[in-house]
Length: 84
Image (cartoon, rainbow, N blue to C red; front, side, top):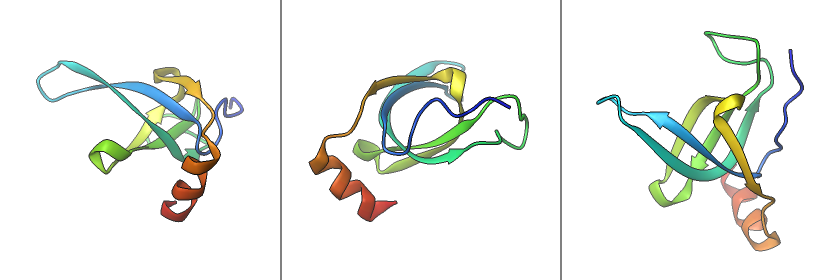
């Protein structure tokens, strides 16, 4: 098992496949780190990523699908720590 590359509250972007086989890229912050993968796999960590603009938590995003953007600003961190 790989060590998780990203930390809680890191701002990342990720791509998901939609129901019509199209893909869409979202930006959010890491809310939960699943260090041991998902139910389907345990080769790499996965993340639950919160997208504030949609008020949505995307679950079990595999690490290879996540791209780091930046660390959170202190003002963002103070707000997000209250949410998760």
